[in-house]
Image 1 (cartoon, rainbow, N blue to C red):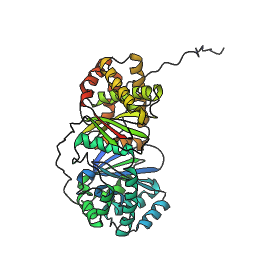
Image 2: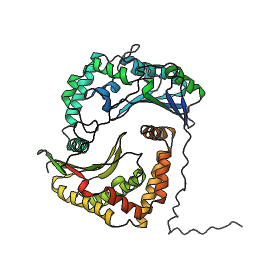
Image 3: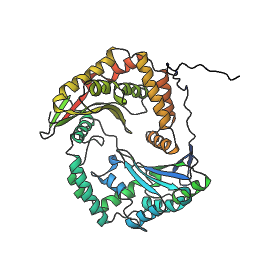
Image 4: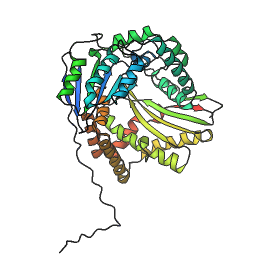
Length: 431
């Protein structure tokens, strides 16, 4: 006789959170020349990702745009290959390359099929070690990028974002200063070459290889990048600048032709190494860190003032900051600011309910598990935490905190860090 299982299809299945996250193995080694190599050997497909990260972000540049232009021009010609030849070879071998830069770091990533990995590493070596920054390509790059920046700086979202960073850190701080379109006219090949010679070296980088990385691939990486030291032997250093936060609590930037206004609210906080970061990550998620957050429910769903409003904790090597961002119709600016303040005060005055906290915990733990799904996603996370001198244990700490955090701790953190008198508000547009 068949066993019959009676199911109550009117009741949702019980949600059970995992009580532990299992971190993937990261094999950290040092190549012969001292260059750190982290290996994330995961996946069965014959593909690899090779990322090399340099302490060569915008904080190190002698003038605006030099750091980003150096990185973006690496593929525009080397001692051995022209830009056309580089593009043709990458296309022929089914490979691609991405460049990414922030205030602290510059990263170049190559994606390759396993059977062509040695070919791609030969091209990567040329791009990373021997770029020539040809004037013809640089002229085209300058013109294109200048036009893009002219357009970008007309957007109220850009105006508000840049004004907030300058207000938080100071207009001369490497975290608070921004280029203008005319700064592209000051670039030349010599500046880029000097920056490359100083910061693109084996003493100033780390490598993360992910995917199907076996002994053969490790040897290939070592052959091209790990035997002899290359580039400037000195590690990049910059003097830590003093943060000078504006005394103005509210700054308006009028743009009369804009039918909407950009709102940015923020304060200087800390980066992921701080003891309160994990708790603040969860508190920020409740406030505006996901689509079901309080700000979204109130200001988007209930009031209809905006298509989207979010909060985020942005982390850099030396600091970090909270930002709340939205674009709203000019007529809704005051109402939106009032509701943002109301949501912050509610976090400070009322404990979160168990049901809402359970929902947020489900979201955070699920998001972490999704973010760890696949070698390349893991590599992204690893690069992010490696840049602030920590490791994947940081993800475990957030996971553990999400499971055990209490309404009382969330209330205490909100009162400790969300004092509205310490927040700076930027409004840019036709407000």
